Length: 527
Image (cartoon, rainbow, N blue to C red; front, side, top):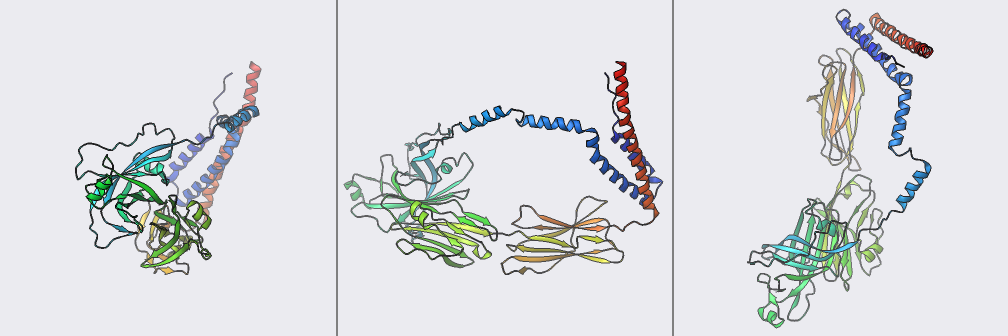
């Protein structure tokens, strides 16, 4: 049985629109505008009812195809069996493996007293290598090619790197996976090693030497390691203890020419810089771990901003505990139990912005981390009035109000777009008020744009564009300049013509739909 092709009503509509276009030279502009508005209304009605009249069976088939693609065609028993297989799938965590992590560093030959370099100390920088031995990392299957680090044994000269071998048997190394895979992931690691003067250096002819290794990852992670190693001040002491002194540092070294050290204390932070909004909550990460036999003495959080500083939180071990503060919180139980010294801030305000320093102190050592906290609040933008009616010999002023933003820097611009040209044209004759600061520390500004009827083109769209650091993309708020409303019989005539065309097209569509069952009945009779 042959099916005759059913003509699409869109073809007839297209022909009608083409006919209207040909008449443009014979009709006045208001009449054509009325016809177009009527045709747009008719086209909208056809687009709404066309799927119901012609495409309903096809839509149902599409719905069935989508359901089959999503696996909905399976029966209840099949879906239940699949869910049971997923629940029985193994979810064991990847095993741990001990690996060596080698990092290129710089040795800064200045004495460090606590956290500050000793005054008058000579400054010198020398290449160094930090080898973290036997670090536990998760083995996800990518560690098959990782081998034990071998110290280069070729001819070594005074310019060769100083190799520090650090054993982490007493203290775990934080963010070990990030350090191990830094090169593969394109992340930079800045490593600096310096001598560190402890409050207690031991007794006897070979006193204990200390070093501090500072690791800074480009992702914002910072790690401080305090390394303990032997120290002899003279050749006689070295010979007495059967030790070979390093030619530059004059401390005992191994047979391979490396300095054997042990990690006694580590502290770390995930954040070098944080951004938050007004009224939000933020946690400044700071953690530490100590070797057995060491204990925490105190924790201090200090804020510095614009040349002034103050203590935000302070806790001394053995005291009654810190005074309760409404916005600042450190979990003392976690501090003493797991070494979590993180600071939580609630209801952040503009006054909380600044540089925060986490200072962890033990009986022997101190380590600090610096975290920048930035507060940013996006602006609220409103244009008044939103709709302007075109009037001759009248100048209208558009007002763009930008309020509630922080920090101060904000960019405001105006553009114009007419119906003749779809591109936005920048406008440069806007005026601005001065910045105003509210009680909560946020700022506001107002921009004014004057529109003269002698130069403006209607209809048009005037947009106020605002850029700010707290915005992912600029905000654009528009005002519409309306063309003069049409009056008279010409617009009514155009609407009448458009209505007649719509009735004609609808009559043809319904007539063909009524004739189709009769043709199908004749075909069945002939068969």
